Every structure is written in structure tokens, then in C-alpha cells.
Image (tube, rainbow, N blue to C red; front, top):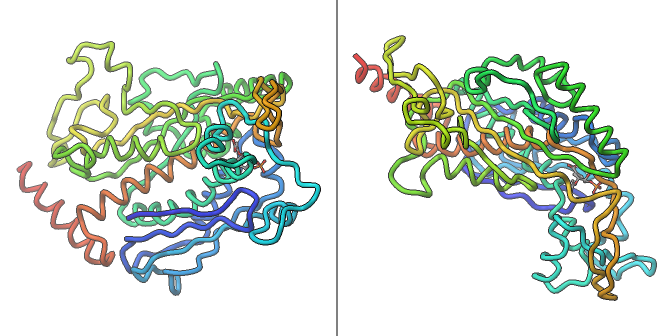
Length: 389
Ligand code: EPS
């Protein structure tokens, strides 16, 4: 399963094309649109989210609510396009009052993108580098979520820290699968603890008042996975590298930890590895420090992966930069932006992880029709049962 996106932040629309989806998968517009709405939400987001009402229109590949096995096109309209149609026109000449972006923001793609592509207007870069693109990803990944949902696999996420405010957790690996999805969805920070949510919101308010931005960490949890997805056989096939790459593909993601993550490097082996036991007629683990991956494959335990997001580069009290026209030191450009988008990034990450897993499922069990995928999974489960008897 693969997807590609196209579209600029202030162009007419974002487009995603998803290929490799089995025929016969039921698709719910509500599910995809609720993920899009969750991506737009969160305390600390900027003015753009009051303009947009992201909804995905399916333009190919689905008929009467079911996939046909052909590429699926999803379109998310940019309502802000109305305000940008002259400045972002595909043809004609630039309006006489066009202000080029010549003061690149440290931490954004502005400068390096302009140097790389030989442009004197960083807008050509930032329009595509903007995290607005993640709306198209969430739409595309909604297809993968439907696929996993049909196979009994659930994906959710929660925010574990914003700036220096952290969710207090005893054993995060044990706690991760037990948080209540409702507590997470009702929190404006996607944090399952009410007190921590309030402290995170206060940190966002303080950052806003100081002209600052804030990053943080979040966790994605996946339950109901079969063991053996991915492969130990070669580097690019390892699910660890595939999920890692998927998460690092999200703008602003600077770190990814599986299970105990860096903490595992501090402990002796006996306090890291998860004892193998037989339970309910199958092999399982009595703990989940590995976060559901062993040898580059799913172990059958919940997948638990934590990622770190840097603060958004657009600052209302900007850092110094160099003006591309004058080569003088100036303050970096100030654009409408978010103070904190960690809850939104968590929703994007749910989708990315779901997509990597859906791809691993179709690799193992086929991608022609849902009936064949399910028959293949039944046979695999049956064989696993015979191996633990
Ligand atoms: C975003 C839309 C953007 C930004 C933000 C994410 O809208 P605009 O630039 O029109 O305000 O709010 O983009 C960034 C944080 C970034 O660094 O580019 C969105 O829809 O998620």
C-alpha cells in the first residue's frame, strides 16, 4: 500500500492518491473526516484552523462505500485559497503588490529550500513544506485505518509532554494500552490526565505571551496486531525502520523511541527483554518493554512508539536571519502560525503508523480483495495455534 500527496498550503486543494488497497473494503466518510477534525483541534493552534473545515472528498476508487481495488483519490479543499488565489495563481503574472518571502525562518525549510531550488521567494518552499500537507496525509491514512479496523486492529495516540510539562506515568509500557480513548479525545491536549492537560495549556498560554512556540512528545499505541508482520531478513523490510521512517517523515519530528526506547540503553538485559510465556493457547510476553516489536517484526503485543516534536519555527518574537535580497541581518518573517501543534502531530502520527502497518499486512496477506486477505489471515492464525499446542 502506498500514497502520495500533492498541493500547496494556500493552493486550491490538497490531494492524496492511495494505491494497493484491496477491493471490498468498506470506507466511512465519517471516520476519515473525524480524523481530519481531530488533526485540526488542540489547544495552541493558529488562526488557520478557524478558516478551514477539513473534509475529504473521494474522487476515485470507491463505489457505494466500498473500495474497488483501483487507486483512491482524496481531495481536501483549502478554504483559505479564496484569500490567496492571486498570490498563488498557477498562471498569469505575479500581482504588482506581491511581497516575496525573503527573510527565511530558522528551523523551517525556507532557506535551504530556496538555495536548493534557486528561487528568490521562500514562499515557493514554505507552501509545500507547511504542515498543512499533513491534512492530505491524514485523509490518505484514513484508508489504512479502515483496513486495520476491519481486521480488529485499533490505533490511538496521546500527548505525553508539552515543553517541560510531562504526563506522570508509573510504567509507561504497561499504562499505554490502558488509557481511556474518551479521556484522550476530551482533552484539548490529547492528554489522558486532566491536571496535566491544564498544566500543558498554561505552558502554551505562557509561550504565546512570550512570542514563543512549544514542542513536546506523544505516543502512538496499536492493539490487536498479529505477530510476524515486517521482517528480520533485511534492513528496509524491518518494521522498526518502516515505522521509524514514517514517523520521521512528519514535519518537526526529531526523535522516535520504540517501547522503553532510550531507557533500554540504561538497563541491564534482564530488565529490558520481555519473558516469553504461553497464555490463551498462544505465545505471548509477560511484559512489553520492546513496545511490540522484536527483530523488526510485530510480537503480537501492543505496538507502543513515542515521538518528539520540536517547537514550530515561526516565532512571534523572531530570531535573526539574513535577508536574501539585501544580505543584511534582519528578524525572520512572522507568519500566522501555531504556538503548539503536538496534539495535531499525534493524530498525523496515528495515521502514519497505521499506514505502515496496513502496508505490512498487505505484504503478508495480499492486497487483491478483503475476502482473500481475511482467508489468508485465518490460515495464518490456524497455523500459529498448531505451533503452540
Ligand atoms: C497548518 C496550516 C498552516 C500553519 C501550520 C499548520 O496554515 P497557515 O500557514 O495558513 O497559518 O498554521 O503550519 C506550520 C506550523 C508550519 O510550520 O508550516 C495546518 O493546517 O496544520
